[in-house]
Image 1: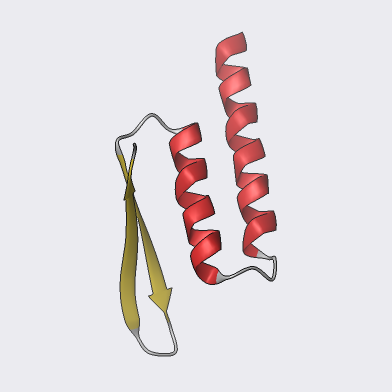
Image 2: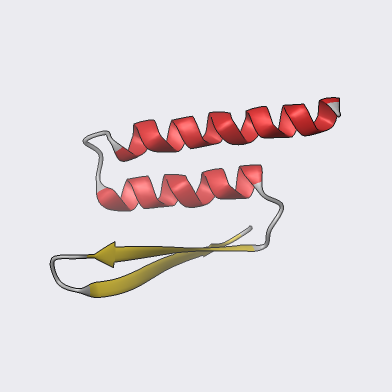
Length: 68
C-alpha cells in the first residue's frame, strides 16, 4: 500500500511540473521534450507519443520519443 501511495505522489508531482512548464514562456519544443521526459520517469515504457491538436489549422500532429 505504501508503494502505491508513493507512486501516486510521484505521478502527481510530475503532473504539477508539467503544468507549470506548459504555462511558462518557454519554447513549445522545449515544453514538449520536457513532457516526454517526465512521462518516461513516471511510466515504465519504451516509447512515448504525444498527440497535439492545432484547432486553428484543424490539424493533428504528434511528437514521439524513445527511451535511450
